[in-house]
Image (cartoon, rainbow, N blue to C red):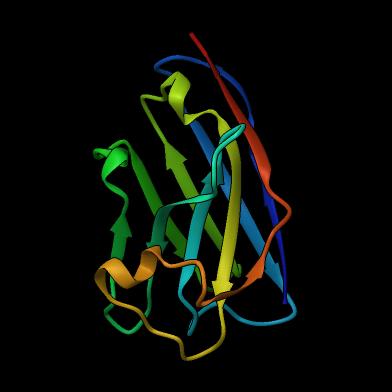
Length: 128
């Protein structure tokens, strides 16, 4: 399973970006899909996840309603719409996928361990 993240770039404070994660080599319909980010000098952290079979979506607190994760199973693609961006959102954003049939609920989505497949990351820079 390969993941290709795209859509990063330079944006001003308050702007928007939409990240995409195209998956090949395996379907996403029965996988939990997540977005993580790593800012310079910091550890990688959870941003958002979308589950399957009714597991819904889950966001880290700092998102504060600004980001929306979605998936298109037919296109094997996951998205992260980011609005009202702040300079502290500057980071490399990674998409990740679990193995098939891995369903997580709530705070379990935050853990990086269940995500077996990772994309290469896309850089988001928010200028002040």
